[in-house]
Length: 200
Image 1 (tube, rainbow, N blue to C red):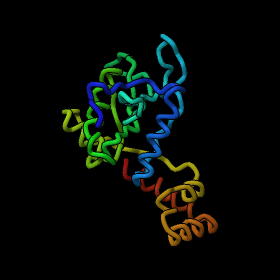
Image 2: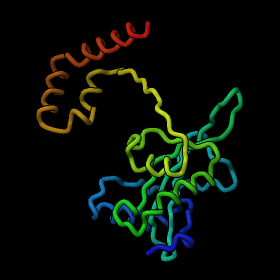
Image 3: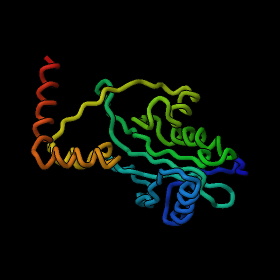
Image 4: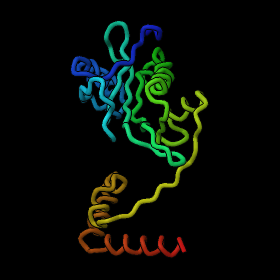
């Protein structure tokens, strides 16, 4: 069992990559589909992170085993005309999802994120019923719905690559027919037209 007083959050360096991969393997063996990217961080020394640079951090116990991980995507944010360095949090994962002994690692992850970055936000992350938001709500983070807008640039590629249309053979067949027949670009054109009319 991990003592949370000895749990340390460290930048993911090459030295910790193997322990991170073992962490992923334990999650996979327990049936968890997620996979944390174990790429080592760039050594930036004392320099500030570059805009949109991704840095990964891992929770390491006294035995050197990784028990949790998350990433920060650093970026400049603007509020009331003032620019400051913030980050988008991503991919927080704890061994607590497969072993109750590590249930508090998720809370420790959020605490470490706040220590590293004062201006932090998460998007998506499984929605309001996801594990991340359950922990965030418990920690009294502010949670709000954010509108999501997108435009389909290439209807054929959109239909071919949309994961929801690959989930079973019937949907894959429908996507292929829409693509080959030319219906995909027509359908996306109609969606754009309807969106434009609704915005008037």
